[in-house]
Image 1 (cartoon, rainbow, N blue to C red):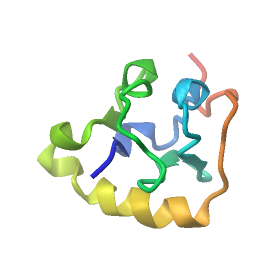
Image 2 (image 1 turned 90 degrees about the vertical axis):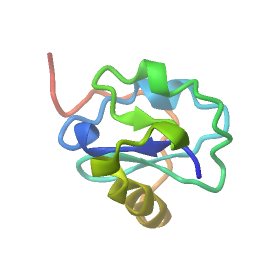
Image 3 (image 1 turned 180 degrees about the vertical axis):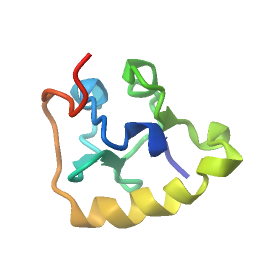
Length: 92
């Protein structure tokens, strides 16, 4: 298992996490970001950068958010890579 972007990112999409990722594992969906589990090395640099606390280490994904592990794996295969910070969907 790798780090997982969960529901708090939906309709928010801050990209501070993307700027610190050393392996470019983030993918950009229309309404949120996803982590591709294949390149993710669980370095944990992204987690503290998320202002809405949407990223969880594999051992910390809350039970109610576990479905996002599979969603990240699926959606990361469909979505393009994102490697640079962009304005979030939510301002403020």
